[in-house]
Image (tube, rainbow, N blue to C red):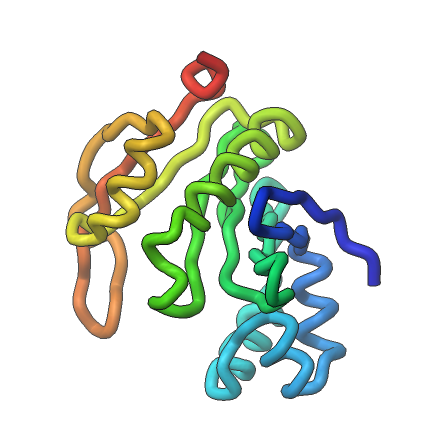
Length: 179
């Protein structure tokens, strides 16, 4: 299977569209999914159930890049747009590293720089949004580093482990990115 790949100094970013993701989840063995997607064996069925519902609708899609360490060739996380409103030229950025020992090394800053350029240049986005929990200091610092503007607070926006949490809404407009 061929994948579009972007590159940074330390990372390969392997693009997975919603169609790729569904195809992998429906045809891969459990062992392949653990390796290729970086999910735990306990989460395979959850991921397959999400794929059955479909990621794309008539006006919304998903575009994720797997983050692969160039040196070790190991999957270390993901970064991309998990809510892409096609008609409105806007998307919500998301990202995650798989292990705590990868944090604090600037890897996500490296990835986000490329992902934002891809979003504005290739996807023709006009606006990128980020929803961040108020206690997630690493993510708050990261979006501010890239010039995102805080727009407001969404009360009880996400349900996490049975608890409703607020989100702080940030955005970055294309013209701000180009400055």
